[in-house]
Image (tube, rainbow, N blue to C red; front, side, top):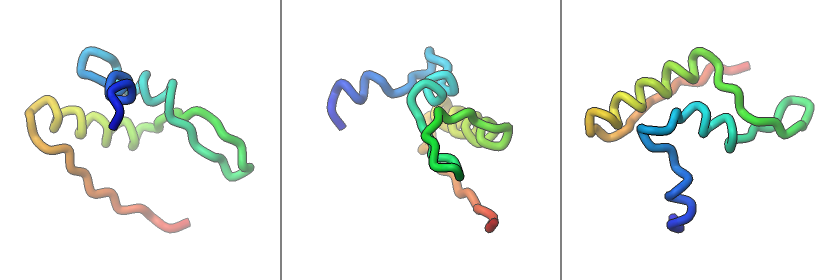
Length: 68
């Protein structure tokens, strides 16, 4: 990963959900590209990942995705 990309990665001093909302985009069902607005479940998973990182553990998450 290039150094300039590493500099933009979230650190523990920067609120990471703010970083996600300013940089991550998704494509909606109507094919529009919009910024990601994390829902409660996504925020919960992200909090678990941040806790693992803060504890010095590898960040590992298994997510089971339901079908639509």
